[in-house]
Image (tube, rainbow, N blue to C red; front, side, top):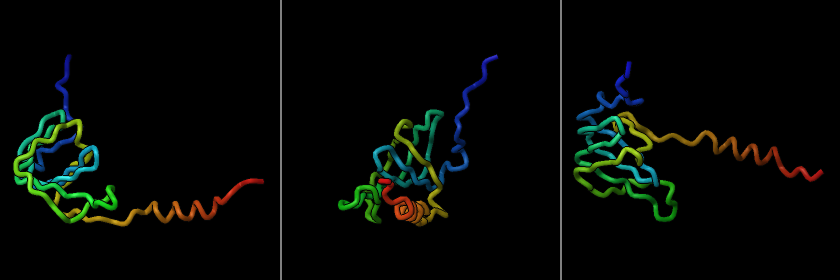
Length: 109
């Protein structure tokens, strides 16, 4: 009655295609997915790392560093997305936060 463990993510459709991977610690890499396993260990070919902005470590710049063949350990993988059709959008919560601070004010009554 034992079932084979299945991964929560099906990466088969991304094999031999470009993917962008966000890793724990803020690093981002892009490359061609060559293999993976149920623990989300990934093998990327022609990988490049997107370097972070020195003044704002939370943002990534367009500057890259070539890595070549890369093995990403599954415990560090936070996000896997196709590299085609990906675009950055403005954070919709930044406006709501500013409005909440203005409306909240100080309640020292």
